[in-house]
Length: 469
Image 1 (tube, rainbow, N blue to C red):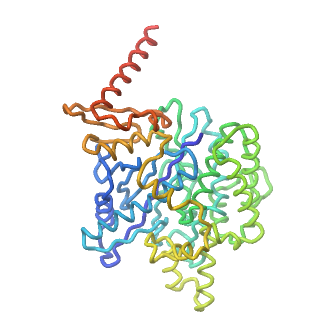
Image 2: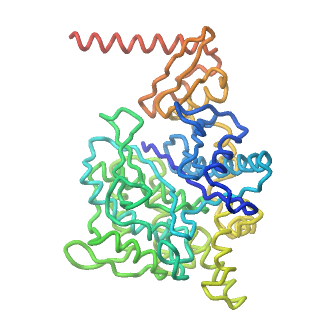
Image 3: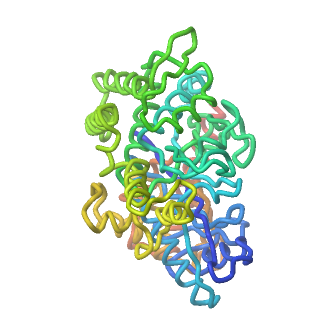
């Protein structure tokens, strides 16, 4: 079973006050969210919400981290819930400040700065790090053919007004590394599992784009989680890129998706060829194991790769970069515009606008031109409450139903004050623990605290007995 989560840093702008400090605007968004929430431990402008997620300020951006989920469909629904939550918070912040705020789900301001969409996958500590570093760069670079959000501009500052698949490709400089804001590596070495470290490793993926298309988000998360499960089981696809960083830029600039990429040991392969090798390794793995959504993932993965191979434009009903390219090409042809025309740049940015009345993505969605992959009811449910099959359920339930008692919360603990003023710490080191059924939703805080204290004492006694034995 996979454990998946995403983090989205949203672009923020006050159009009528362009000099406004984005840090101040972002803090106003976080503090204005009218839904249930409690402070994250020892941090300001950082809230744990009633759906188990976190909303906080990071480097001048409002950032939303989804709760832990066990499949790509739930992860995508909670990712979309983040869009709805920050949009609602921004509307309230606009009202309080008297300043109109705009939020964008994109990855660059076009002036040399890039902000992230991050994926998180919990892996077994038994998987060797070297295996990850060997396999992951090739997978991340070549998946851009279906995960790219599309961008007008080449280079970190967008100096050349041409179109490319990815908004992030120009901002990576090495194969691996810890930094997320400069000198970025395709494989991020951060390892903060927020769980028992002897058992779990958190793979923090920073090389992906923020997609507007729910289908693209789902396929991105689903193929990655399945590929990692296959890798854990020893199914390693053949073929590694000789220079993954250079290949990232090559793939991003290749609108034909047919560029020949040099491989370690000689020879070349296209991004689609290499993705098919990863797909085949996953199919072989599924013949030996069960995986949530596994057959569906392989089927959709195969169909997208075949369609891209035949005609990239045929995927404009599912993928961001092809849908946006089709829109921009139609406008350019109709109005006789070059790629460097202000109208083209405006539409590129508007695609990422969370305001449905201003975004051409939303217009295409309303017109039925885009595949509906996640039902609105699932997104509404994700806004209102946490997943039921991970520890996010206990975290979200406590925040939503006992907000006055919750003092602070983190991913792996919740600090609660009982009626006598005593602080109790619910420790949740196992992501699959404290799901629905393991917590009495009708219990009072005093009763819950007593149960936790008894359970903690029991575990301590067992540990003491083991130590003495």
